[in-house]
Image (cartoon, rainbow, N blue to C red; front, side, top):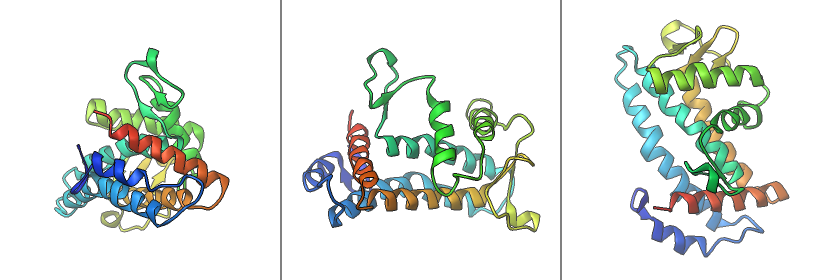
Length: 212
């Protein structure tokens, strides 16, 4: 199974044996950069850049935000080391099933940099239902939410999401989601108890990705 670029699940198994949960190391940097981050960029962030490069402004923001919304749940469950199991009856403590995405989605915006502190629980839940679910199920935003392109509107928003105006600035949202990946890396490499727990969660997540 190809994980990132030329790396496979077998490459991960070999590298995993070099990882010590107790302490960060160069091996952990490689695990994150070459296996995890490279996977995100080759499969998500680079295609988004290709979409944005057209500069047509004919609705590309819907595709860009839809793609980014699928990463919210993935990043949050990397923090917790959970993997999706559609059969909830057999779910273990490190698995989650259908109907649990709202809680995971909201947790990301409440607890993870750079979004924590700027979005309320109610707003995060509304973004889930009106933007995430609206785009994925109806190919549109709902509840009055809009997607904007900051530069075309002559402004440079301080944050990607404006809960009051109900608008998501696609370019700023991309920037902040990339920053969220960097924040995850920093947290995982921290030499404290939280970093240790996140390293263990990271291994569970990667092992889950490697399952057929």
